[in-house]
Image 1 (cartoon, helix red, strand yellow):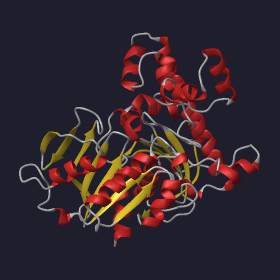
Image 2 (image 1 turned 120 degrees about the vertical axis):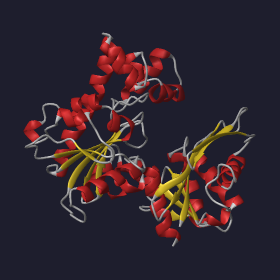
Image 3 (image 1 turned 60 degrees about the vertical axis):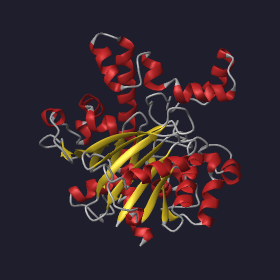
Image 4 (image 1 turned 45 degrees about the vertical axis):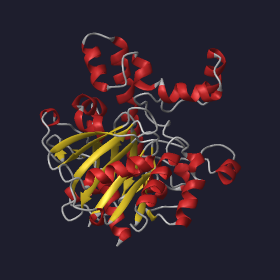
Length: 398
């Protein structure tokens, strides 16, 4: 079976065509500037890179560009569209309506559309991508895989806020969590690697660290808590997001800077985090370079980030009643040894001991960076959210 994985943004569309026999991507790429002048698609297949310039006023045209590229005789990957057996779509929000991936029928699409107010920046774009695919490939089964569904196993005590219960009953205001496909993938991979599959007592803390970061407590393959909250603004400070803070700060900032509520939330989502703290960049490579040159604010941003991650790690060890494994993943988690080291420094009392040589010299695939004598395994596992989407799509399409 060949599965096309689609991740539609407001003006972009990323894709991978995955052969499920090998679970390898045989083509991948992305369309940029959809609905804008100068739209283009970067496509890669069979070792060939191709940039395709085309007018893409909507996602429907972008999907057509992708399909044309996949069957192109020169740089394509398949001989005809008939080889695409199913399409898997990344959809951000499942609300409380879905706790697993679903076939995208008229009924499930109506429910997904009703959840748009919970993810107003992402859900409408995801829906546009689905409708565009359905218009061009009406007979191909389509599956929605949700960012939030993995966290639907959280107990009520973990997702309810300390506000009147009516706010939850009336408007579903609660912790949802995000990056669920990544946390699910790496926690499962850790269980396989350590021979703990189907072990209900396997306790792992997964740290998905990138421009957007979240941390999860996973027990027996199920999420019991996670750092992102009602929206992705909660949790640790991120590239441009503030992370957790006193909610009264919102009103205080709005009054001091004469901002509207929308402007204040934009300030917290897009101008805060390590970018706002450092005044340098949201890119950790830039922060590390600036810190090495003596930039105090850049070093402070790094310290605030790693300190917050360490607090969550300790809190989730408590929530789990101990921890068997710590997993680092995503852009920063997989590639920044300094961040990994800072987060687990001085945690030997918990049995978390890092081997610095292993941490500085990773190989391909899963890497065990635990020091000799460490009771808690520390793993670096490359995430693969597209593969999670493809696997669920294959399962449901069949």
